[in-house]
Length: 367
Image (cartoon, rainbow, N blue to C red; front, side):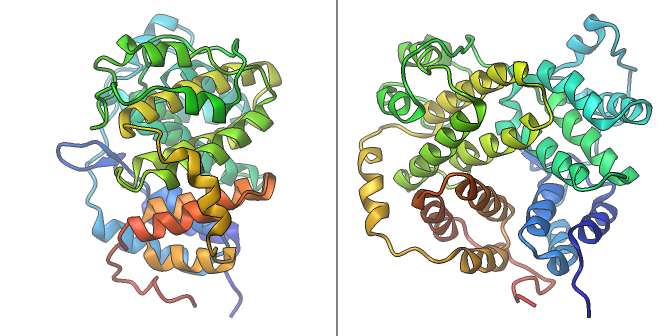
């Protein structure tokens, strides 16, 4: 039997995921990872396993009904669309807006119009707005004739970003003298008191946060994104005491930004990198309390016995957790751009720290 191609696997996945809400959870707003996980698995070559993974995901993750459209957003009226930013109850209005625009103009034009407007709210649900958008962009970029459900997925990624749009205090720029690794090492965290994951409460009052916003020197987006992903793969390794999921976004978010920036003009890249760095500073203050273990992670990785990437792919599939799958794909893609042992080591750590999802459809067997 012929194996499913990427395009076939994604077309089937989008059909199976149609109607699944944007979020799940009671007290926490947890993003729908179905489209992202399916696209990552398809990219890793597991097209034949995507359908059963999606069905298991739907069974094990009950999602909320998506909010319905309420009031039309006028894209030509800045007051209309700005007022709707960060209003999750209006995510249906955002999806309707982006759906209209994607019918009227090429998807790259829609992306170029709206993504720069969304950069200041990049933190949206721990960057899941950006990440979901990027997975949709990669799927659309794989064909010259995108299908309706693939375009609809882009409208939902952008809608989620707009609906959970979250601005952080202050404004980052690239006027400093540090690279990412040095800026991370210089960030004082012990006195932040944000280790529990508090987002904006008090963040702007922390001197090290305000100073870090101006720490990075100018650099091309491609090189800066590689600095970000390699450094934060190491940060993930160095903090086994932290919640094993949030710091993953220190890698998956800039890896997603790379996909999106490939569709944007160069003059938009500096703003994007500054916004990404601001998110990284917030992640460090929210989810780590010290930097004491980070200085030795390179030595630890040099001595580690690392599995080859095909084995890591298979273990990620067997684990089944959507974060592990996305993290594995992002790390592999980033190490192909700039080889670094921290990526494989970070994936191995995630496989150990994030428990497997109970699967009912047999995805755990590599067929």
